[in-house]
Length: 188
Image (cartoon, rainbow, N blue to C red):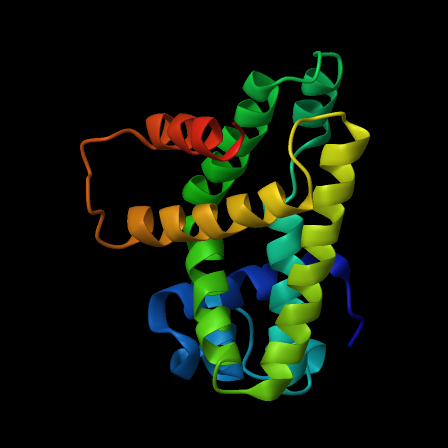
């Protein structure tokens, strides 16, 4: 069977939906076939093992959470400032919130990585590469904050997203207000 990229993305998206809805234990090739609406066995043609399926899901998470070229271009002409930094953070949080399945799937994989060393190795490498890219982007754009502050924002955003996508401790406070408070507190 020819392995076209459109179908591969469709299958990976279905896998993310399964992972978000059913958790790690529900992630099977057959479950992904069902959600993708493809014949039984199609997922295993694209992702031979569960590990290769997980690798494909991690790759797809990165694709779906990446900022659009339009968003990056729009901000690139603005002068570096705390306000611009906060705008980038709000955009990250918006993408994580709007693509709920992707964010929940990522949390599921992070939990699974605590039990499966092969998932920890894969996800850890992906996270560290993303973090290094974020630090480099921030530096290249002349934005305030260095490696330490970017790490603190990663930790804060992970906690914020877990809160917002599960049981918020303060549902009446807007997410944008929380982001603004985080920026003010972490970029003194």
